[in-house]
Image (cartoon, rainbow, N blue to C red; front, side):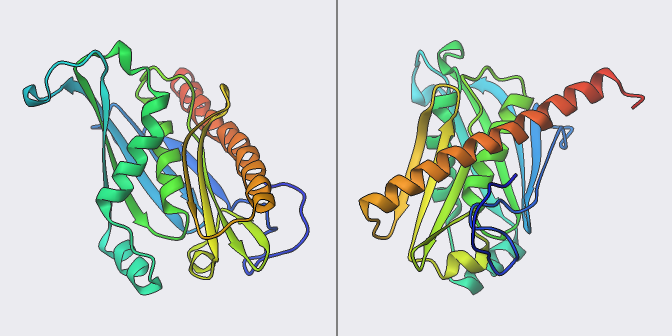
Amino acid sequence: METSTSGSRADGRGLEEFRTVFIKTRVLSQAKGSAYVEFGSTKVMVGVFGPRQSEVKLGFTDRGRVNCEVRFTSFSAHKLAKSGQTQSDSSAAQAMQQALEPSVQLDKFPKAVFDVSAMVLEAGGSDLPILITAASVALADAGVELYDLVPAVQLSKQAGQLLLDPSLEESGAEEGSLLVSLMPEPNEVTSLTVRGLWADSEMRDGLELALGACGQLKAAMREALLAAVEGEENPEK
C-alpha cells in the first residue's frame, strides 16, 4: 500500500506511504462483528453489537442510530499523555459516530441502535482514522447493510511536505493535520477535520492525496472481509 513518491521519513517510508497494514475480522466471539487492525505500532480492536431497541426516553424515530464507545488502554493513554497528544474517549467516540453513520442504511432499522465498542490497544499515531476504518470493517463483518465501507486517513503537514498516515512522533512535530473519512463508491466525504493553517494549494493537494489513499485502504478492507468469508467456506485451508 504505497504510491511512488520522492522523499523519505524517519521510519524509511515515502511521504505518501502507509505503515504496514494488517486487518483481521471475526476476532471477538461475543460480538456480531469485529475487527483487529494494525497500522505499524498502532493497534485497535472494535466489536459491533446489536441491533437493540432504542431507549424509550429517546422516543420513536424512523431511523436507527450508531452508538460509539472508545476506550484507551492505560498504556496507550500514558503514551499519548507523554507525547502531549491526549484525546478524550468521548471526543473520539463522537468523531467515529459522525464518520460512520452516513454509511449505514439506518432507515432500515427504525428505533434500533448498533453499539460500536472500540479500544486503542496501542497508540502509535493516526489513532482516530484507524478506529474509524476498523469500525467500518466490523460493521460490514456484522452483516449490517451499508452504502459503502468508510476508510479514513490522516495527513500531517510539516516543513511544506504532506505525510500520509503519520506516526505518533510525526504528529507531535506537525504544523497542521487533515483527517478524511470517505465512502469511495459514491465519492462522499463523511467527515473532514482540519487543524492548523492551510493554503488553498496545500488543501487541494492534501485532499487529493487523502482521497486516493482512502481508495487504496478500501481495497485492503475488502480483502480482509473476503478472506474471512473464504475461510468460512473452506475451513480446511
